[in-house]
Image (tube, rainbow, N blue to C red; front, side):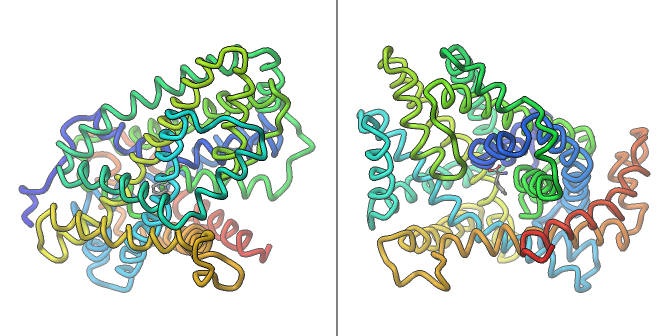
Length: 453
Ligand code: PHE
């Protein structure tokens, strides 16, 4: 495809909202608040900001540079810039990581849709044991999760096949502000509950004694995942940026939006949980088992408000998941479209069908079909482990080394300063971080996740 024919985001706002849409996802809601609460509250949050600033934003700028410079899908971008040398493999790994994550991320996104439906028809009522059973019955059911998986994939398909401007950008401009409004409404409702102060304290009270190496590495890992780094998403979206986009500023804005959403998610969850004396946990059990119960109890004397809040909460989760899913599907769509020379419609359809098949197997591995377990892990957990703990750090690490040590500095400088039209005051700092600090930190997370340090 000739460069002039290539799609572009139409506006600066579109760029920020679409990329922030990729970053803001389930990770912000189900992992960040819990990690902050467990790991020293305000201290963790300061750590986290530090990691976003020092590790996350430079890595994001690096992916921006690769994507915008090459104006092509992630695999081709690494190939073009490295002139076909072995670095190309990293690009392919990025695409593969994005693709593999799509399937299982879609499973959980489908669960969110099912919970909207369940909230709407009044099924989310009962005692804690009921919610536990409700979730287990649903997630291990052979048909229901697959139905919702297909629904969310169909929604993603309908957006992505419309292209970058008319699909992704337009949808992000509607979905992201809606998400933000829903979030603010729930935060206000949650913080107004009696006893909410204890939850706010849990989140923000600095507990210096909680600090150790693990906390630091967890903050690093979370920053990385939360910003959608090393999965091809950022690089693919950057290939649609215009030549005027200030890459460093955009990365900072996206980092700030993502962090604000994470903190607001904490202010939505903890005050409500503490006001009813439930201690929150993380992951699927937090959002699908603990929280429905928390909302029900917290608003028991205003059942209608409780009903609306649950509904809004699952709508918010689904929106966060959908915008992330769009970016994941776009990685492989751009790849198929450009490498196989097929239309966007066909490419999107292929990706959505293939990812849905992976999703179906992941979903079945959670109870409906035991044969999909290996070494005591379900297929779902295996995908999570391989992509999140192995591919993601590898792609991140080699991207830093590639850009810091092998790509001619002129290319990096030109992209960073928009061909000298921006001052690029932080260029040397950026280069230092990407050459030394980021690769070392990523290496540490990698070894830590594998339990080697
Ligand atoms: N950043 C997303 C989150 O916080 C997860 C994600 C990673 C989405 C990579 C897309 C790509 O949940």
